[in-house]
Image (cartoon, rainbow, N blue to C red; front, side):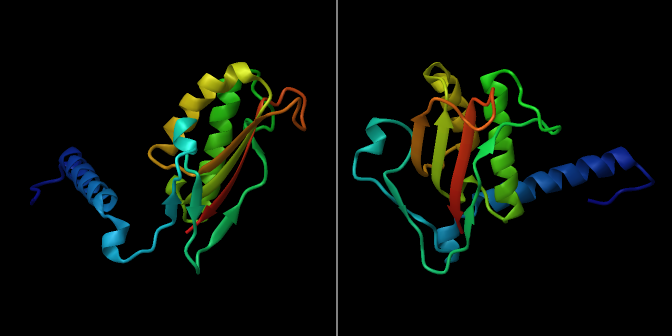
Length: 163
């Protein structure tokens, strides 16, 4: 498409359209068709009865590994929001940032450990977790414990990823 004159809005719209097409194409490529080895999901029928996760994940040899520390949902100033949903969303935001810093994404998560204080937050957490994981189904462990390291901390996440 050719532009006549300095119509910046038309050029910006054209670029947005092209970027959307590139984004759509990039996400439509199936790694297996390109010869990229993916982690193998192993399901023997236990996890599917309990939730949206896998029984096990087999990692291919030669993979790069990422281990995160326990990650709470802290604000940028280091404080804890008072409510569970905010803490859970911030914890996932930090986990996603760690994955991206390692050139990984949620589909590379092999195992997730989740520690929570209150059982009544489980339904809210499942929704937040599902929003962040999408179709990824890593092996999973969720525990309810009496307390975490900081007073007021309601959730802590830890992941292992491989690519």
